[in-house]
Length: 184
Image 1 (cartoon, one colour):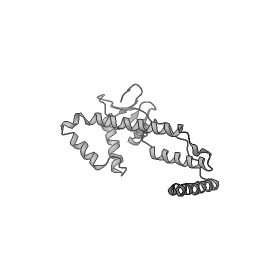
Image 2 (cartoon, one colour):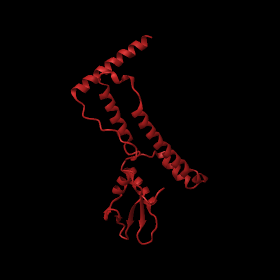
Image 3 (cartoon, helix red, strand yellow):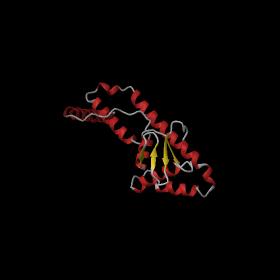
Image 4 (spheres, rainbow, N blue to C red):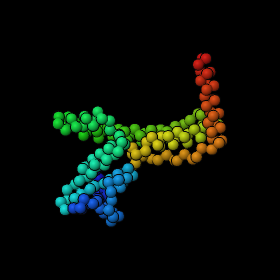
């Protein structure tokens, strides 16, 4: 955690219950995972000893998601992580993982910026706006959960009959353009 001042403080009682000091109520691991997905920094400490338990609980959250079939980490990556605890690679792995995730966050932000700022010559085509809304909805669902602090795309409105007709017209125009390009 880079900035403990902004971190949401969770205290673990002797009964192993987790207490949110901000809202004065008990929370679950899933609540903590939600806070993190929303972009909050979280710090979990043992009430009696004052030990920082954040790493232990974050690993537990990851293990629970993985055991439910929400596999984010491929088996070979997990194997390499286990190996890194017993080799000299241990000193390199944390920096590598941190840099990799930072690049992923930066790439996601850059993709969103480029997507929003991109001038589009096809904007005058009929049905283009419906197609753009579908692309935004697809990107938003694909990026969900990667970085809660990334700018959110507007939700795509429900598709109407005219949207489908416009989309079919675009598909037809694209097919005609492809046929022309093939002849060239």
